Amino acid sequence: MLKSNVQKPLFPILAVDFGYRHMGVAVSDPQGKLAMALTQLHGSQSQAILDIEKIVQNYKIRSILVGMPVPAISEQTQLTKDVEQFIAKLKQATDLEINTFDELLTSKLAGGTKNNHAGAARIILQGYLDTLHETEPTYA
Image 1 (cartoon, rainbow, N blue to C red):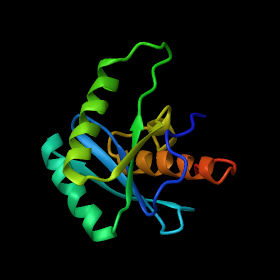
Image 2 (cartoon, rainbow, N blue to C red):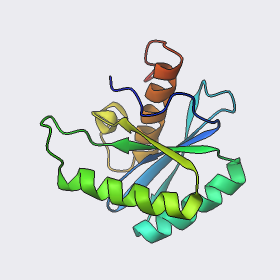
Image 3 (tube, one colour):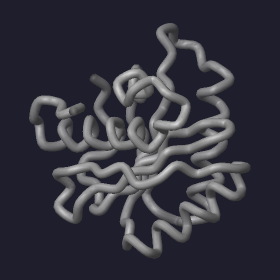
Image 4 (cartoon, one colour):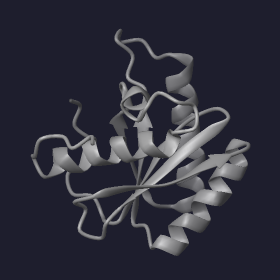
């Protein structure tokens, strides 16, 4: 499992499962131990960022985690580039610390349906939290 690019994140964390049509979001508890699926965002990236800004305010989010598609080969894919562009826009809009974490197989673990992006975001976030606390992954 990939480790994040940050040592000590600020809690609570908002996780985003990036998608072109839908994005899933999940939040951590204030102690950074448990991830909870929140909602699925619909619409454009600009609308998703506006929705994320509201969530950041409502939940007093202190950092953001974005699921990063890590290609099997070392070359970037178009999806990876698009996620990086989204992260740059999100950083500009929120001015929060933004980290990434490998999203490999999270959609399948979340049930494999196109409507379960929030579940995928929860799995990404819980994997990240488990890595921070050096515990076994809790995907269930």
